[in-house]
Length: 170
Image (cartoon, rainbow, N blue to C red):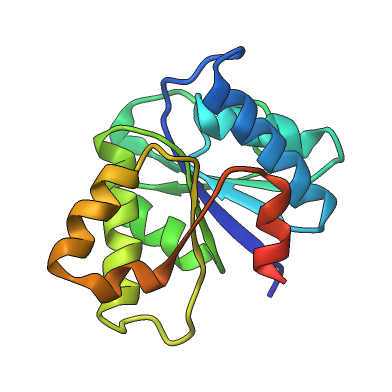
């Protein structure tokens, strides 16, 4: 199977925002290293990562959802996977990823992070798949959860620079 990395993050980021720039740089770095980007296929960090990957003709799989009533994926998606519910969409995003990168985001990103983290934490994943947290946004949550379950932090890596991603994935 191809090398795929699923990216989770806010749909509210706009060009010029720091998280947008971070996602765009990450998409570029991953595509340069031969990775296929998997994300939700719409705006914000999804658009930014696709834009970065497109600079080097990288592949971007957009896992979209008909329940959202959105017309179509963003212009950087090279292959669309259409799902019909939020649960089906999240399951497909998780299934396609060999690793996960989590950018700042809202409740949707929290749901995505929580599910991949819990699957790792409870051993429901055959092979360990890296969960990479980009930046400090989730630090308070990670600290809070580690007070109850100190071992849960063993499943995540926190980084600040897109170039660190490829080193972790090697």
